[in-house]
Amino acid sequence: MLYLLDTADLVAIRRSYDLYPIAGVTTNPTIMARENTKFLPRINEIRSIIGVKAMLHVQALSKTADKIVAEAEYLNEKVGGNLYIKIPVIPEGIKAMKILKEKGVKTTATAIFTPQQALMAAVAGAEFLAPYVNRLDNMCVDGASIVREIVQLLETYHLPAKVLAASFKSVEQVHKVSLYGCQAITVSPEILDALLKHPMTDASVSQFVQDWEKVYGEGKVTTDLG
Ligand code: E4P
Image 1 (cartoon, rainbow, N blue to C red):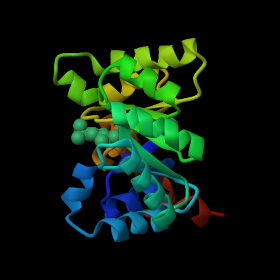
Image 2: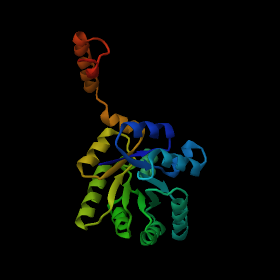
Image 3: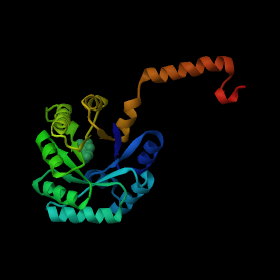
Image 4: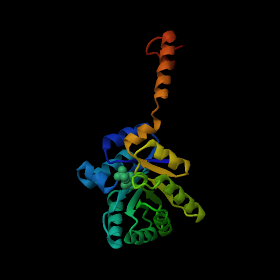
């Protein structure tokens, strides 16, 4: 499983990078607008926190293939590192994915709501496919089952693309796509923390410390003892 952070909040990125095995950061136009700051400086700050080897996914805004390609080349020049250009699965987006594949520019197909959208993007050369799990669930469609079908299609057709499931609002949604063999997820810092949270874990840790300190002294740890 590749864990990615779906945020442009620098404090949250620094904290999660320090604590967790994070493979990269994803952004989208809404996430960037929420930060209400200069676009390129913020993207480059994220790059400097995560380093050049980590994945950084940045979305193009244009609606025609030639302009999407121009955005992709601009971002690769200005940001660089292990960069993925997120492109929605509209017809001009698929065309842009084909062109960028030829040019050696990595892409992530986004705004995916059906397995067939994902399949075509994978055939066009996208490296990652981003289905929106919670937005599907909110339309009374089981988002996780769409992820499972995409995983199956990639196996059936021996396509190298990976599923980067997105738009999560619960641990249950993450758990279901994990069971279905989804290769990557992008989640908010809050959902990432929630993946680890369990009251019994906290209670067990407290009990261990309490028992230990009765014998070895308050605040003592293994390295304090001979
Ligand atoms: C990532 O690719 C998506 O843009 C993002 O996860 C969408 O999340 P949302 O449905 O919470 O806006």
